[in-house]
Amino acid sequence: MMVIDPYTLIAAVTVGGVLVGGGVHFIPVGGAPAAIATATGVGTGTAMLAAGSGMTGLITAAALTGQAPWLILASGAVGSMLMICITMLVGNLVYVFGVGCVPVSAKVDTDPITKLPQEKFVTPGTEGHGLPTVCYVSGTIGGALGGIGGGLVYWALYGALANPIFTLANRTDLSAAMVAGIFALSVFFVNAVIASYNIGGTIEGFHDPKFKRIPRGIVACLIASLVAGIFSLFLLPGFLGGI
Amino acid sequence: MDIVTGLAVVSLMGAAATIAGAAEDLESDIGSMSNPNSQVQLAPQMGNLHRIFNKAVSGEPVAFGTWAGIAGSVALILLPTGFGPLFSIATGAFIAALVHAVFATTSHLGRTTGSSRFEQPLFLDVVTQHLGPIAAHGFIVTFCMVGLSYLMWTALGHPFPLPMLAVMWGITIGAVGSSTGDVHYGAEREYQQYPFGAGIPVAIHGDITRMAELGARNSIDVVNFCAKYGGPLTGFCFGLIVFLSFWTTIVFGATGGVIAGIVIILLLIYLNLRIEIFARENYGEYKQEKMEEL
Image (cartoon, rainbow over all chains, first blue to last red):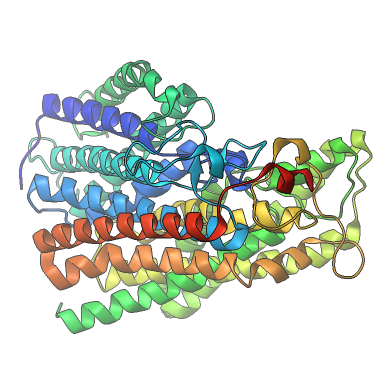
C-alpha cells in the first residue's frame, strides 16, 4: 500500500474538497418546490442529496481499501453515480406515473443534449418539474466528481494513518479506516454546505444560469478544504501533538 | 469468498434495503417529514387549518442517520454479550424507536406551537394515533439498516465499523426517500382536490387537501395512499442502489466492476430518456384552457 506524506495529504484533501464542492453545482436539486412539482430537479436539499450520493461512493471506495489508488477513486465515482442515477430515474417514475407530469426544464427553451422543446410542457405557474435528460446527465457528472473527491480524501488519510512513521504500536487498520472514513464524510459535508450556500436554493445543472457562480464556489471550497487539510495533520499520531 | 456466497449476501442486503426503503418513505409520510411538509407548515398561514402530523424539524437524511447510528451503536455493544446478532440488532432498533417517538412528540408539539398565531390547534388524538405507526416504521427501517450493515461488516469484511456503516446508509436512505417517494406525497396526495397531471402552480401553494374519503384527513390517510406507489418505489430504489453497488464487484471483480458500473449508468441514462419521451408522447403539451380549470 502506498504511504502518504503530510504534504500529499494536504494536497489530496484540498483537491478532494474542491471536487466535491464543484460536483455539488452539477447536481440538479429543486428542494421543497421540486418535492411538490413546482421546480425542476430532485425534490430534496442540495447538501442532503450530495451527501447521500457521497456516502454510497465512500462505502464503495472503502470496500476496495488496499487496492490501487485509481481503482479506489473509480469505485467511489461509480458508487456515487449509481446512487444518484437510480434516485433520479425512480424520481422521474414518480413524476411521470405518480404525478402525471412531463420531465421538463424551465431554464432553457430546448434541451441542450436531446434538443427536445421544453417550454410548452411546463405547467403554467411553475418552474418546471421532473428531471429531463440534461439534468440527468449533469447530475451524473456531479455524482462522479463527488465520488472521486470523497474517495481521494479517504485514500490519502488512510494511507497517511497507515504510515509507519506516524503509526503507534496499538493502532490497527480498523481504526485507520474509521478515522479516514469519518474525516472524508466531514470534508464532504463541509464542501456540500458551502456549495449549497453558493447555489442559494435550487439549481438545474450545468445549463442553469446559476452555474456561472461555480468559480466563486470553487474558491470558497479550496480555502475551506485547505484549512481542513492542514487540520487533518493533527489526526496523525505523533505529528504536531496529534492523537 | 466465492461468488455464490457473495451473491447470496448481496441479495439478502438488497432485500433488507428494499424493505427499509419502503418503510422509510411511509414513516416520512405518516410524520410529514422532509420537503412536502413545507406545505403543511404553510397551510395555517393561508387559513387552512388541518389534522396532519408535522414533525419536520430536521432533514430526513440526518434524522435517519441518527436513528440508524443509535441502533447500530447499541447493537455493537450487545454483540459480544452472547445474545446473538438478531437479538442485538432488534434491541438496538427498539431503543432507536423509543428515541424516535420522543423526537416525533416534541417536534410535533414545537411545530404546532409555532403555528398557534395562525390559530392552528394541537389535536392530542392526532399525537397518540400517529406515534405508534411512526415508531413502528422507524423500527423496521433501523432493524433492516443495521442488519444490512452487519452483513457488510461480517460477511463482506467492509473496513468501516458497524455504527459508522449504519449512519452512512441511514444518511443515504434519507436522501433516497426524500428524493423519490416524498414527491408522491407532496405533489399528488397533498393536492388531490386539483386535477391529476400537472405540477403545482405557486398560486395554490398552501391550499392542501384537508378532507379525507370520510371526515377530516390525517396522516394515516396519507400513508394509506402513498403505500400503493411512493413507498414501494422508494424501496425498489434503495434496494437497487445497495444491490448494484456490490453486485458488480462480486461478479466482475474490482476492475471489471468499475466497467460494469459505467455500463449500467449509461443504460440508466438511456432508460431515463425513454421515460421522458414516453411522457411527452402520451401526455402532450399544456393548453391554456386546461389550466383555467385550476
